[in-house]
Image (cartoon, rainbow, N blue to C red; front, top):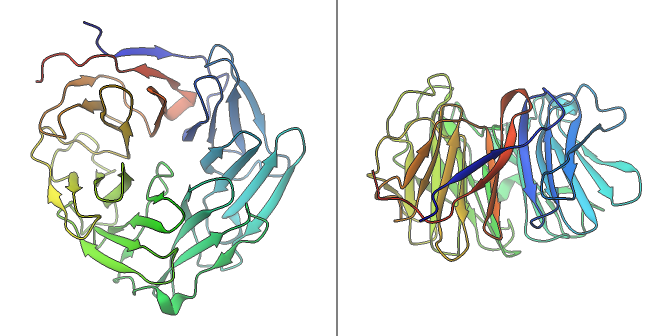
Length: 328
């Protein structure tokens, strides 16, 4: 029986990495601090490291790669929050800059090459939500009057580019932290929204939901905790089976701080969750951990049965889940 196989890959950088995107088994991109991005065309045997010209002061928390296009999301205060686009074989272009001094982009999610959303912290009591329907040719803010108000002290986290997720071009969910741990959902591409409470720990500025994923229109998972106490266990995972209307705390233990969560596909689907102090897999709908790896990471992506993770000091690599061992 094959268990999880962790293969570290030399990234060629010591920058903190927080963005990871898999196009296929050979083509993977990662992103991080000081304008850094990485790409491989051979499944991680070799990684090429570069910086976006003029973006050396930016922190690329999000990356999304397609066959011919790549997008980078920079998170930072005011105009340090930006979206860049690369048409493979051409030059990087700056598509959008946040001109709101109080703004701060957190994460982005793509349905396909043309449809995407980006989420920013509240400005004047409303989350900033950007939308494009033409591959970033135009990015426009969704009318804030359509968005439910944020609570005092509520925001989103730019920890792993996974505080937002999309399923198709109409359904989008994003998760919050701080004074609340809520999930916002739109079923009409952002024209109207509902909000639901979750049992994930919240209250402090470093607490709440850091990541959200859906495997279909009904079944989803949120993960988080307290990033200032990564070893601390608590109410950090919750699931839904009704599209996010209601959330139930996962009974699985332990639940350390988790900055990213993703569904693992393939013949034996499951869930992978990572944080700076843990990497965990469950293949029984979060009833138990099938295995726990000792390494910690910031972000995760899983596609075509392959899982990649990135973390501090340029750490990245591939995890091949294989078949799970007996539950622990």
